[in-house]
Image (cartoon, rainbow, N blue to C red):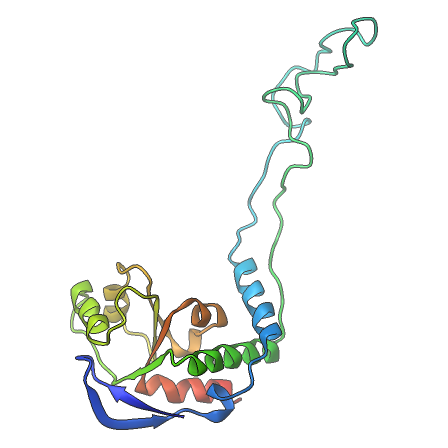
Length: 209
């Protein structure tokens, strides 16, 4: 598949790039995508949730009334979960949500996600560019020129560029990552995948190992 290269003003240049069939034309494996996205989302969880059980709430342990003869149910203390402020039954406890997925599966998932984007014609190639200063307006203008304003966009750079990252940070739905940090979730979560020329070779190098 050949794609035209655009400049930051949205104009099509005379250059064209060939997308690797082994990556952008591969048969997608949806189960691998599921496993990788599941791991990504699980690993974002801190797992610090905690509620107090009846043995941890600050109430008197005095028995509320005698065991028998009241005509009502038996009640041990105000710590009973049935009372307001009482302990919670089977409440959440801190635990680790981290999942493990084999590297080959993760690689297959990223290839599958890129292949889906290629089939949907949701990939655009833009010339390498830099911003002299962090400026949201400048980055928003680039997206406007490329006619992808108002959509979730993922810009993939070959190397870290602090000015571009800071310029995109205040725009809703706009995200910037390095090719080495590209993951399945970010690819699928974006409506448009924006690759700079130099990042394309880097992506192909990483995913062809």
